[in-house]
Image (cartoon, rainbow, N blue to C red; front, side, top):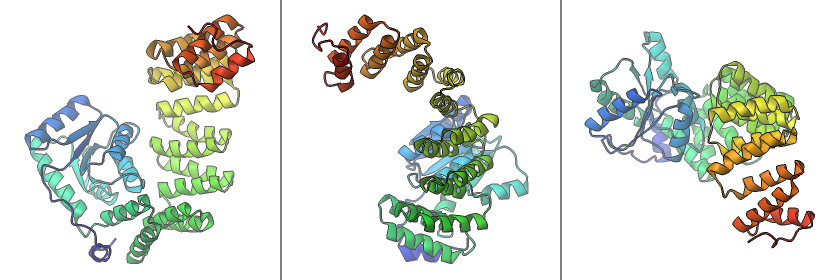
Amino acid sequence: MADSSELYKQFGLAIPEPFGSKLALHIGEENNEIRLIIKHHLEKLGFFNIRSSRNGYLALAELKQTPADVVIEGDDLLHLNAYDLLKELSEDVQARRPAFIVISKPLNKSELMLALENGADEVMLRPFVQADLFPKIKRAYENFISTKNPERIYEYAKAKIRENNLEEATSVYTAISTHSDKAARPLVGLARVLILKKKYEEALQFLSKAIERNENYVHAFSLRGEVYTTLKNYEKALDDFKKAVTLSPLNITRYEKAAEFLIQENKIEECLQILTIGIAAGLKHPYIIERTGYCYFVKKEYTKAIHYLKEAVRLEQDNVSFLNSLAICYRDSKELEKAVQTYNVILKKQPDNHLILFNKAIALLVWEKKDDAIKILHRVLKISPEYTKAKEKLQELGVSQLSGAA
C-alpha cells in the first residue's frame, strides 16, 4: 500500500505515545531460559512493563486481554508461530495489533524481505545479543507508528467495529480500498461490517473478491466459511474451512473457529474432517484432541471418544472440563466404575463442585447404586440449595429433599 499519510489526516488519528521505556512489552519464546534472558536484558535497558508467554496460543490470549505496545515473538512458537500470531492480532477485531518483532532463524535477503512483507515491523535474527534489542525495539515501534504505515488505520477501523460505529468503520475500509485498489484486506473488513449488519450475501461478494485478489488469504476463507455456515450452505462452508486450515495447518485458532461454527450447527462429521487435518499435521493441542473426542462421543463411537478424551486429559491433567467429558463418556458407554472413578479425581481437586457431584449421582443411579446417589444429591443441595436439577431428581426418586440433608 502506498504512503497512507493522507488517510491519517482524513480520520484524525491521534499522535501515538513517543518511544520510551514506559511502553508495554511482550515476549513470546518457548525456551524458558532464553525468555528470561531477554526479559533480563530488557530490564537492564530500563523496560519494566514486560509480560511473556511460552507459546503463541497463550500469547494471543494474553495480548487480547492486555494489549502491548511492542511484542517480540519467536518464529518457532508452539501452536501459533510469530507469523500466525501477527496475522491473528491484525485480523481479530477484538485484538489490538502492536509493533511486532519476529525472532527468526537466519534468513537470506529474499526471506527477510518476505518476512517484512508479511507484516513484521522488524526481524531479529538468532543468535542475538543485548545490544541488538534496543535498536530493534525502537525501529519496530517507529516503523509501526509511521504515517506511511497503514496498520494504525486498520486498527482504527477495528476500534470503530468494537464501538459498534459501523458506518465509520465502513468509511475507513472504503477509503483504504480506494487508496489501494488491489488490496484484499479492506474488502474483508467491509465484509465483517456487513456480517454484523446481517447482510450475508453482500459480505460473500466482498470475501470472494478478496480471495480473487489474494488466493492465500487465510482469514478470508475462514470468514467465508462462517458465513456459509450461517446460511446453512455446509458444503461450501466445509470447503472454505478446509482451505483455511490447509493454508495455516499449525494455527490452532483456525480450527477453533471452524469447529465452533460446525458444532453449533450439529455438523459433527464435517467438524471431524477439519480436526483430522490438524491431527494429521501433528497439531497435538488439547483443544483439537478434546473436540475430536467430543465429536466421536456425539456419534456414540465411545471407544474412539474415550481414546481422544483420555489423551486430552493427559495433556491437561487439571482440566476439569476434559475430565467431566471423559466421565460422561464412560457413563454413556456403561463403563460406570471408570465414570465414578473419574468424577472422584475431579472431586479431590474440587470437593464442593455441585455440578460434578450431580453428574456423579447420575452415574451412580445408572449403576443402580440408588442409596449412594441419594446421599450425593442431598450433599449437592446442601452446597447449592437452589440447584433445580438435584431437587427434580430427588422428587423423581420419591425422596424428600430434607431427609439425610443434615
